[in-house]
Image (tube, rainbow over all chains, first blue to last red):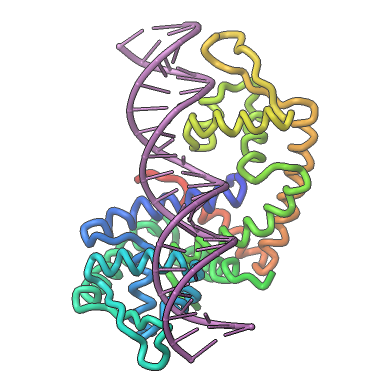
Length: 138
Length: 138
DNA sequence: TATTGTTATACTCTATAACTATA
DNA sequence: TATAGTTATAGAGTATAACAATA
């Protein structure tokens, strides 16, 4: 087995994943990060930009740019939040819901292809391991 | 178990790894990528910049900048390659070898801490899985 | 003609600081 | 005083194009 550094393995495992999911989403005009935002907005709607940002662990200024892009594409809409006028309630448009549905299916399929070299057991252990490694109680 | 996307899990697994290895290397004045370059130079020396770049799958123009930085720190030296005067033979200095030794130990220790939440079995499967996922036969 | 190293340049991703409007 | 959104800005990290020296 390889004795390459974990950092190298993670980097290149991720690069290969992007090489599969990127083209899978490209016909829909979004990338994986934008799909993640759509997913959070759909699950938690109506949600403020900061709530969505915290959920995905991205900076709130980054979220501004991402919502800008998604709004330009007609996939989400900002409207004033009913409870707090400082907030935006960001919601999926009809088209946003459609893109989310098709994007989620495309990524599922890409992830299946990605994990194809592994046995069923390895896939299960990998996901469980990543889940704990990604959670910091440092 | 979490149903979060693999992309999210990889990203945050990697972020947590960097949060551990970064500070471990910081007293030595290098980061994980520079340690990787030192490792390749040590194993394959004398090696051209392009050979080293290919080994690590980084761009040759990126390698120029990394060797520049390592040379400024006194950890590597460029000398003319005996066989081909277009090439640089890049080698570790005495101090470079020392930093490599101590850096490798620091990263080993950081990776141990990083993998601490996993069982021995999970660590083994994780590494085997990453090894195959990181290798593209796409 | 092709390759190695180099420089200049640009692009993506992300973070920090400061502003505004609201609370 | 604090929070949500925004803008401007800057810093990594990386990639592309073009060039000089050499093969």
